[in-house]
Image (tube, rainbow, N blue to C red; front, side, top):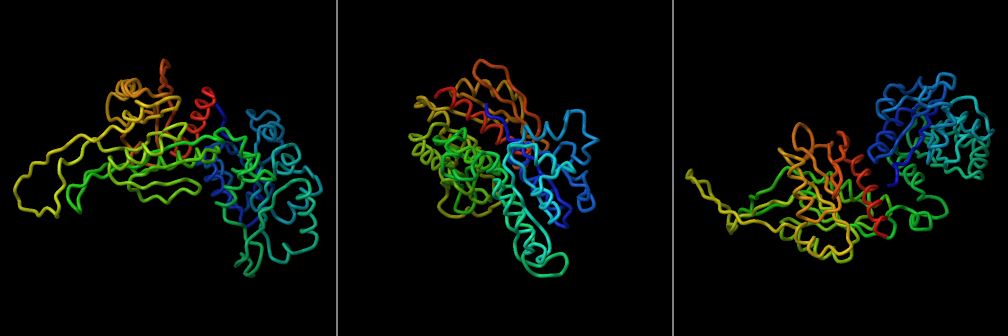
Amino acid sequence: MPEAPEILVGVGASIAAYKACDVVSALRKRGAGVTVLLTRNAPRFVAPLALATLSGRPVGLDLFDEPAAWGVGHITLAKRARAFVIVGATADLIARLAAGMADDFVTTCALATRAPLLIAPAMNTAMWRHPSVQANLRVLKERGARVLDPESGLLACGDVGDGKLVDPGLIAQAAWDLALGRSGDGGPGGPARAALPLAGKRILVSAGPTREALDPVRFLSNASSGKMGYALAEACRDLGAAVTLVSGPVSLAAPAGVDLVRVESAEAMLKACTKAFAACHAFVACAAVADFRPLAAAPQKVKKSGAQRLLRLAPNPDILLTLSKSKGKRILVGFAAETEALLANAKKKLAAKRLDLLVANPVDHGRGMGADDNEAWLLRPGGRPEHLPLQSKNALAGRLARELAGLLGSKA
């Protein structure tokens, strides 16, 4: 199973250094392992404790005070990195990188690593435009570094012009692409992308709740936010897959690069999933489909009368069970959200629906439906359940996408 990419984040002594926190957070949400390194004066602008908390790891501050777990830290970290991004690169730091100096943790790792280098400069306009800075950047580019030119705007010094650090979200995306081999001469659709674990695979993902109409303004539904399914669609996309996302009604933005099909009811979701199922290599059924629908929806809004009303329900189709009957060579992944007897109920679902993997998660105390985090157990046919501790849904999605790549690879 492919591992999550390791990314080094170097931070320069720039007023924009605090934005490294957003870069680290964004990379961690995608599932990357992140280690932060600081130049000597960077701690004057951003707290190492904040970066350590966000990354979940010690921060590299002093070459002569390395955590024992790193061994020879600058070498160990440099070897395992898939990408090295420097946030808030100052004129001084750029000059030291171009000169091949190794006088702090950032520059030493930059020399020791073979990982691609991404530089996001931030400085005063006059400094940015100075011929020496531009000459140093040309040297670094000739050696293969990628530079995210700063934006134009109001700078901390009060000047207006080039020099403002590019948006942290764009930095994180560029670093993630580099770590996955999606940048450079290959481009997003070129040879580098063809090497990704899910390249050439078409994945169908269902997400969110369904709504079953009681009348024109009321419906039966559940607390699913769609966050887990949307995160899974993005994680599969990032590993090279062509993704179709069939989504119930949610308030989430459409993921870029994903074919989104919006539906309301369980029957509409079944129809959309059936249409996409024929061409897919794997189906990840993450949607929280309503088990029942009103036997008949009222044509007009039902008025309040004070009297009790009897609501008759009909069972909805079981989408995953229905499609599993024509499984063929496809990989099927299901989800089981339970409030009791989690593993017992999950094992029954795994067998009944002919699944290759089942993700069981408890729904309580900030876990599961509607929450940002999830705790899960992975169940495989004939295997022992594997526990995945509470983590962000983005991180869990990355883990599951890599698991899916391994399952598809084993059937290739």
